[in-house]
Image (cartoon, each protein chain N blue to C red):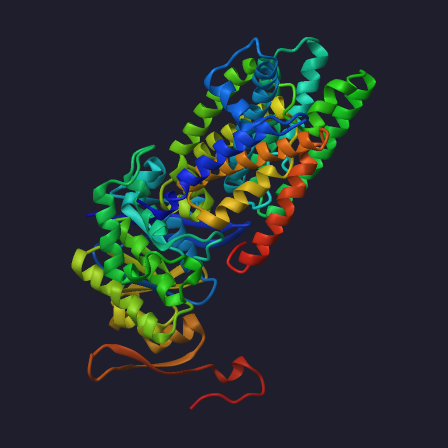
Length: 323
Length: 271
């Protein structure tokens, strides 16, 4: 077996450990024993169990699954666009999803979670189409400029709609990002969906490899580039929009995690999809935990604070061989 | 066997005609070398055959079927190309890169079978790339990287190999090594080889057939002994070349060459 798989058990353990830690720490701290008893023998008459099961656990699970989805979406977007700076929020996909959600909320006042997800996907996909047309032009810089422009433009419209319609409270949740206020019901929808999407991506790992190594390689190996660019982009947009519906606009995570993983494991998607997902889950769950501990700080700020020094350290250490 | 023919090919890039009306049949099982000055359309021709560039008019036919009507993977099983600038934007392990070669042979969602792995291993042994199969591409020298690319080409198992300046950036030893590998493989497995080379003596030494191009047209083609004359060199490359016959190999050789006197003002040339 390839040695790149050797670290898999450690990382899976890391996910479990970060789940336990995130369950323990927050506005109130709980002992590991209490967390363990919620998992093994849940007692809903117990006040502590009730809080841990109904409030803390959905939030931690939402953080894990969103981190998983956002990071994988970032990885796929980087490969499809051949651009190391691609990420759902930088490309404007999150902004598109956000605007569509607000428009839907204006039309239908009591929006269900599934409707939020679907409208998010429609908005994200419209931006995705623009991205796909921009990737055909030559310069990678074009793409990032277009993404940043689209993002600002869509957020401006969103803000306008929010202010004129007095949707401020509803919207803060989406723009600030955060895993609070989740229910088990939402997770029951999201987790299987995320699993199906990521399995579909994993089946296309070799297609992503060929796409990553450029158009000439794809043509000479006889790949149907258009089809796979489409499929993988649609899946990446779906993953990002579901994440937006659940935790709002999370920035930087989708950029940070794939880069850390590629520096350690190389570029083959067979490995990077799995590791990116798992690292993303860990980093987002722990960031959300710190956000809770520091009196509900914005999770984006926490990700930047934890992630950036680590990111710079890796770039400096491995910079010669990378990028 | 696979016969490849170019019929009435016209290629334009940015509204500039690069190839005008090219008609050519690739010599099956032989080594053909295309020579010509920079910008004459040599690379464009290889890229058109391998579908990287699409022709404005005309078509490339494999066994009398237009490649545009064939499935991409089917074409990739017949024709493989080694590009001129194989600079990788992303780093990758040698054996992983070579494994890409099996892509056209795999069905959708299928991963490498034992048979594919055997072929990958064979290709890397054949070129000597297996010595550094666990290393990253960025750690290799130019000569080593070229062996990896040739392994990729071999493991693709196409009947027609296109090589676009395979010796560029290599020192003389590695140039000969690369060309020897190509020649040996052509002799062993009778694959059709089409190369673009700049060194005229290499072209003579390794080819069964020479194609001379200038300004998007084929000027002449045939066996090196027939094709290479002083007039052709003067006309195509604008050099004052002298072709003589090598006493040992009895093949023509570009023995002496210089620019014509009038090419650069104020400097005297010529022997």
